[in-house]
Length: 175
Image (cartoon, rainbow, N blue to C red; front, side):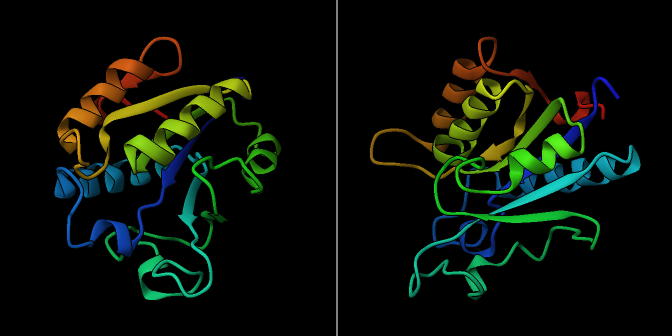
């Protein structure tokens, strides 16, 4: 398995997907993520789900309704779930050990939010020796005070492609 792949779905939680300010191209994000989950499973590639966990009492505290993974995601018992408290999916989590145990070399990344957890995790994964695929049309964010969400997504696709990730559209991803 020299090129074993895994899918990493970052922070596709009820509180982020169904917030008052929805993510850019929300329906596309959900549809593409669901399609990639099915493709990974069909290829017998592991699927990892990250949940951003806020402090006790916050809207996304562990176990709260907004912390839960979105209902639209086809979750299965064989998937792997982990919680994180920082933008990096690797910081103080089990992800690296689980990827190494599964002999994963190539990490396909989708999810939320482009400018925080997606960006940070892509960069960290490369530093840890993974070949990283960022799915250009399956990550998203919301507008900020300076840029629209569409601009943020486009900027990160352009910035990360090449030195950090291989940028592929959903239809071009093969597990």
